[in-house]
Amino acid sequence: MTQALSVKTGLTLNFSFYGLKYRQKNQWGELIKNHRGKIESLCKTIKESRSICVFTGAGISVPSGIPDFRSATGLYATEYGGFRPEEIISRSFFDKRPEVFYRFYEEKIIFRDAKPNDAHQLFAALEKAGKQVSVVTQNIDGLHEAAGNKNIVELHGSVHRNYCMECNTFYSLDELLKPGDLPRCPKDGALIKPDVVLYEESLDNEIINEALKALASAQLLFVVGTSLTVYPAASFVEYFRGKHRVLMNKSSTHFDGSADYVFNDDAAKVARELGQLLNLF
Ligand SMILES: [Zn+2]
Image (cartoon, rainbow, N blue to C red; front, side, top):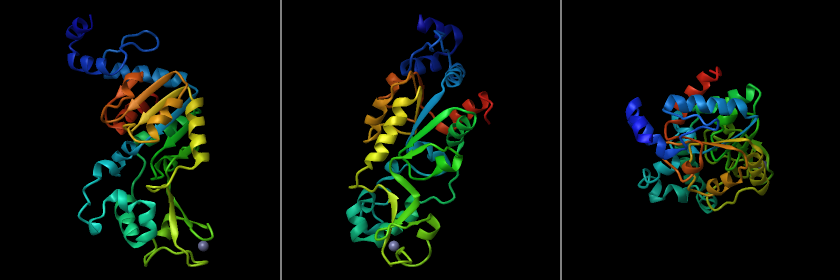
């Protein structure tokens, strides 16, 4: 039946491809035939959902020019004295060799000119349009905030917050990156540390609770730009209790089978189509 229909409509490629990836009928029992049909169907789902949780990872910021740290791993192995990136951005390394840490951090982790892309903008626009949107992100780039979302849980912190390790005074990114040697607190001369979770550091319990609350209370869940292979992403999405799941990630994930809508595509591109159809862009 499926095959016959796909031959008849000439959508063999789309059909078999998407057919494997998600249910072929939407929640209204309508058959989704192709990409456009899927976008239209998802727009209906969005319109009917009051609360939306968006769980994001590095992939959402790739179209903004921020490379996925994990896929970039290995590229710098020979630089920075032969230290691996994971080693450099660990807490013990920060304590021992802050000068190498900060050189790497400034050159490879901070992207000061990066702007939110259509995927960030879509979720900010939905919030502006009156949806209850909460963002749970693994990213530290601050792009959801820049796009205008108000309700954001930053699991791994943000490059925009930095604090004195002695007196806890907070400093902006500009203050952190002032030219000179190591960033030090003007009040007491102690080292300033980015408020980001380094390797060997654990996530803040309060933040975990906020994230789980956001996941558990939403009707619609978007998982964007994460392969859900690394803790905490994989276990967090299990807390979602709502009806519909959407997956937007370039490569397929183990989550695809349980999602109502799967887009193994560029998140910004899919978001643009959705935003246009919803008259948000
Ligand atoms: Zn201080």
